[in-house]
Length: 236
Image (cartoon, rainbow, N blue to C red; front, side, top):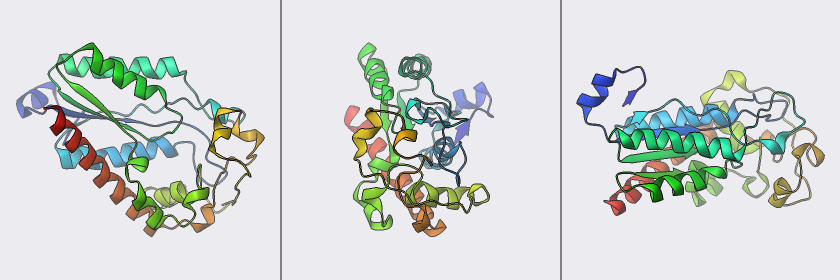
């Protein structure tokens, strides 16, 4: 794996043609988890993916479109247009240098502009391809084998808490409030989370364990690599 601590000459001589771009968010995750959850997961999982693929690991984009968390102090949101533009700029810059395979790894559900960004990158030129992956979703049915409260888990619940207990246990607090609004996920499109989940939790973090987190990370890494390799193979 190469990263930005390497020199330009190192990267040129390696012949690497694959780059991994992590994308997260800085937003509240209840009273028991830090603002950096999505970013931390993005950086951790992407490093494992890049290492196994022999790819260039780029610094992650820490900020995402987190307007649904308005009202929770410390949550920072950028516009969908800003996220789309910076992602496109990064991908096009890489392609102009000869990178032909770019994996954009998204760890925040609100970053819907990324889909538009990779489409515009791919339709604008024919030298390289950008592929968007959301590792949690890519893991599919495997998640339901681990997360006991999967159908109730949307934010700061069993899944995210378990992952953080595995990758950064010192950042996980004890104030784990179980709360599941009597709504469906469309609520995120209708108004700020603070209106229907005042503590910033939608799920049951009390079910979380570090062992579950370790398995979740393994599944995400494997599913992401399989998807990227299969997609890039189809495109060659």
